[in-house]
Length: 138
Image (cartoon, rainbow, N blue to C red):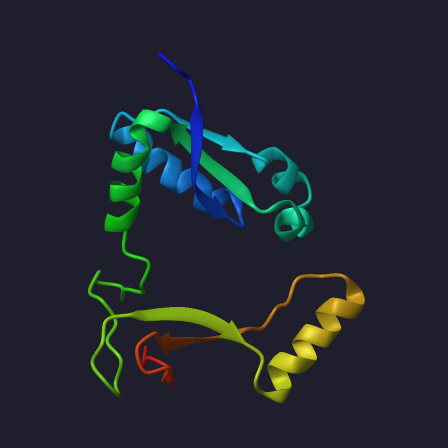
C-alpha cells in the first residue's frame, strides 16, 4: 500500500497544528507535520515557508477533511456558548486584536523599539457575516 501523504491544512503556529494533529490521531488517522521545527525555532519565517503543513495518508484525506470541517473556528464564551453578533445575531464571530487607541499604539511602539512583547492589547470581536466589530461585557 502506498505511503503517500497529502497536505490537508496549513497553520501559522505550531500550537494550532498540534491541537488538530491530536484530534485527528484520536480518530485513528496517521498525521505528519512538516516545517514545525523550523517555525518553532524562528516563528518569523512562517509566512515565508508557507506555514506548518499538516499531512495525512492520501487514503485518509477525505475523512480528515471531514473532521476538520466539523471543528468550529468561531468564538465561544466562558460557558461554551457561541458568541452572537449584537447587530445580526449571527454566531460567525471571531476574536481579533487591534491597535486603535493611543495606549495600545504606545505599547506597540515601545515593544517594537525595546524588542519585547507587547504588554497591552485590546481584543475585540468581528462578525464574519455583517463585519460589525464589538466588545463583550465581562
